[in-house]
Image 1 (cartoon, helix red, strand yellow):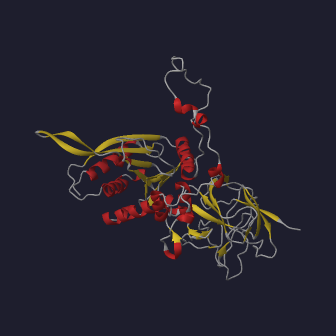
Image 2: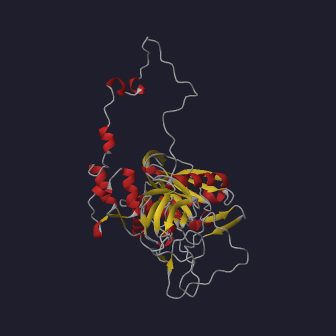
Image 3: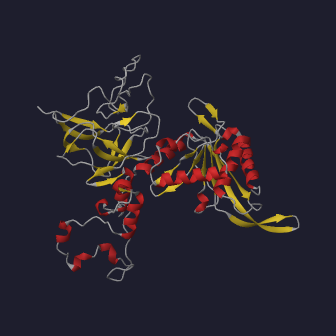
Length: 464
């Protein structure tokens, strides 16, 4: 008698309640082997490849491309094949599912595996990581699959699906841009498709998905019915009377679009911040008139932020509103807001207080490139001590940026402008940078915030 197993979507290492299906690597009725690519899933921070926890025939896929699947919900059903390798029942991923029962209080951790094994493997149940080391190792935040359990960063592997080798993030971009990967010429090592390959194909229109034969065979609609009713809208009716407006009860023409991935997580984070933080915003203008040629605006902003953090540590802190505790940080990790089409990313620029101008610029470029390529590790999207948003590169003078707990403060820089400034003996034209500082008033006083902003203004007023 055959056995059918259901694989439930595990926590993909980020503690998020759901993930979006990017692309299935199998179809119903196909046979899949243990640890072979099963599906690409997009979370708020990355696109990851989920391997199969079983060997056998795929009997049911719980969702199609673009569907949002809750963590712990059924993902796929597989009829086990006893003639193919299967996972031992004792092996698991270390990632808990929503349906998995909690361990009883006082229960000890299971004994480690035999020496020589050092893998984290996929399972249909949650559990505790087992490694081949003598000391227990903390979960390194990996996802399901046969991956080494270590604290080092493991690079994504390009997986071949349908004869096309590409990373999950590249497949996600291709789906978004409407590019057929089968028609793209790879330029990466070993015949791997890259982000630039997909972007070039989309720009040149050389790899559009082929039109379905059924669509091409459809008979042409009569000319009278070809035009949609709204295409011939006029201000007057056929009798010459003014057209009536639609009643308020009539539905709008647009279709609701479910938020996914980064935007879905951003909505949750903003709602949580709005509910928890008591925000207050101070605004002022930094006078850049004394700047010498060659100053890097973003680097100068970060340097000024660092010096303000040293002068007023209360804003370079984390605040726990539930326990009313505050953690002051001796180092400065700046969360740099990076705007993308997928949504807002905030990678952490680590140790900004010990980097010189060249080091800061190099770190900024690396973070932005990794965000835009969707190759940034989840660990680099958290743990910052204060945030910076340079929205002025687009438009806007002042803002009320959102403080995301546990941080206490965020600084936003508006669009630079030239303005007449009174000086001894007359007026001069100075270049000004608008600054907005939002802080959690539960954790810092107005005086501390004002002194913090003054420290930034003083630093930005220096020639270099």
